[in-house]
Image 1 (cartoon, rainbow, N blue to C red):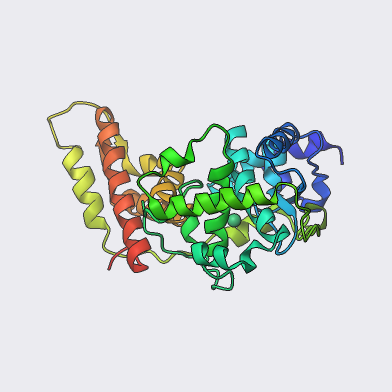
Image 2: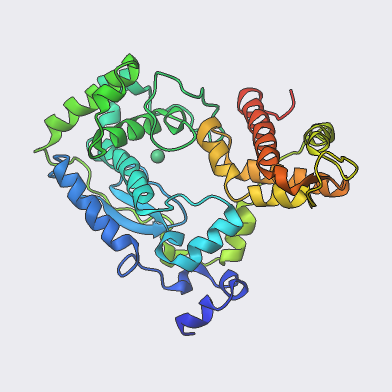
Length: 342
Ligand SMILES: [Zn+2]
């Protein structure tokens, strides 16, 4: 089938086995960004180690390899749009954002290539690599013990991520990490360790140069539709949020409220529109995963529809702000206590 046929509609795209999409880094928007990143590595003084790039389902570095997996959906614009629609969260929205992820993944590559995690000083700063890797980590927002790089206080997920985030901050061009972390001694000590280590490794050959194309895009036999049905999460929704919705929307103005003559709009529509940006923002500042926030917004939209809630069109900013604050508070609860309502 010629390529233009799969771009004609998302239904056809969703039924395509991923390996048949013929995705490649070469010729894609990723190619010049990777070339730019290679230059960045040279300028950072990383002379003996070059990562190997390949397309897979998500960002990552297979254990003890120098291979960086890049989400395949970044290789084609229509797939990025499709991913945003089905997953709600694109990791690598712009050139700047892709470079940010690359610096983080390069941290893992350096860690494995030089077996840094076996060094006593590494363990002293970051902890043991054998700590369990918990997907649902519970970060302490704005903790002064960690650097801040990727959204969601990602350094707090695991020692390996703490190192990768530290490394990413260290190698970010033009960033004065010393000044930036002057008031965070523990995070600064990690950065200084990284700086010393990278200076010492500049002319040392890596111990490990293994390439591992785990879940390479050319081996993915399942379809995009199957991929996205697996990634949809079933988050348990709490009852008892109707009262919060009433507080917000009745305050703003019901049909009977004569303080504004503006036309009324359905609250459910607003909640649906917030799906586009709110989950990523909530994740950035709370660490609550975007897919959970998306499910929460859908739940609230269903309830708002059933309750036939409306708001005056001239108070949309206030309505968005009120919903954003409610959702953020619920997300923080979830991060702290493991559920939206304690
Ligand atoms: Zn990582």
